[in-house]
Length: 135
Length: 136
Length: 103
Image 1 (cartoon, rainbow over the protein chains, first blue to last red):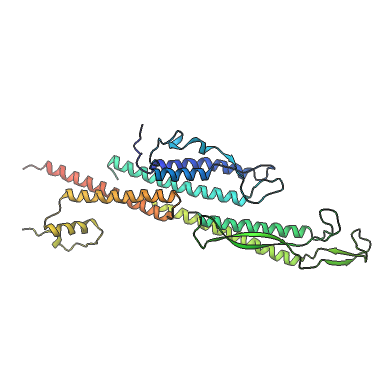
Image 2 (cartoon, rainbow over the protein chains, first blue to last red):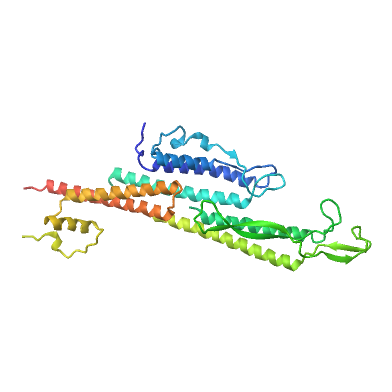
């Protein structure tokens, strides 16, 4: 059933906020395991997510909250954490951790999520003001 | 959109590696054998930095990459100790030519640079937070 | 006999609603109708909203848009919408008042 917010950017912002929140958990796990031997850093598939966002925006389905199964039209496989083989510092047990990189990823994720949530809130307030006919 | 954080992080990683190298040097200040057990003085290592273009960033914004090099220019210190197990035929032992003062000054410099980049990241975060206030 | 609105000394800027209305009334020489005013404002609000949403999409698909641009576009659309809601409410109140006037 199409929802009242289809046609705005609310479904797009929802996708980003949901992805950001799931990713925050995975990145926090990376930071917690910074000293665990034989731990490889894990992450959600960010590039796939960005690519699917770009395709949805250019294909016109980004404003549709029923584009695929999963929350807000986000395909569930984009929310699965995977191990990442990143080309960064290697330690003696061949893992690829660096606390600066993890903190940077968390900071960027937080910035993106604050941005998306602020825009989402503003859009919802606009819709609400129009519905109530009250500023 | 978040290039300043990437740039600062590359600097943080580079400075941390510099600190690690300095710590290696200081730990091995009296090492006269290499990892295979042969009598060979530990060669001082140092880190060189180079500007590197980040992918996805606008042209002209560069981060930092580092390279660990072995200092082959300075000769080892030769000390006359005939009873030492690593002494050569003339009784001289080769000790690493690592100077405490140089290493300490480099360590202070690396630590300052690290702090400066942390402040830069903090300022970037403040700008982002302030700009969100446009929409209250 | 009342003189047309554009004879008053009201401040006009090329972007303000009053200025644009004075522009249209100067050509027709009549007092602007509420219908024109509302339609014009609706067009403005729609245009701002579309540009805000396209700014959001451009920035999220990796375009060269800064965060500040997106936020200001969104805020402008927000203000325009709220202005229009207020104008709509006032017009509605005025209409009700006129309806209740005893002739």
